[in-house]
Image (tube, rainbow, N blue to C red; front, side, top):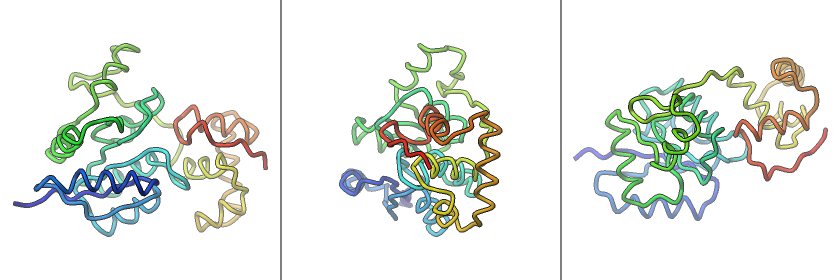
Length: 225
């Protein structure tokens, strides 16, 4: 029997170990790698080519939503299942827009997690019942015939989202440039594009936008650079 290979992406080691322990009891599932940042997730997907990536959202350096976008673009054969403690509208909308195959809340059972992995591996979608109901209650037109939230346009490029997250985390342009391996001028150019596109002209405003868009958590401390 060929196993479904899984990459676990979660920045808390205890939580990752818990997920691994749950999945190791399933004979047709195999955890082949673990990552604690979105950037590691992209790198390990390139190396391991897992069947399914189980992805957290809130992580440092590169969040799970942007990591999902990059993985789906570069490795379309790999399915992504979002597993998050948050099911806010901003997160749910973006999950659909970025091409993830499913969304589960972390309170889900081991049985439901395993079932979701199997279904999305088969090409289906799987969204928690609570998530589907939330979207239907908000706007019935936002859910398609399969019970999946419809896609929405995302006006920022992949690199702009990376820069936005790092700025919102309080990093100065020099630190952002070092993290991304680009020049200071390149980061400054992205920063100006962000402000122009979003019509936001200070770091505090960019941070508030990042929180509202689900790019970072609301617990992030505002730091003006």
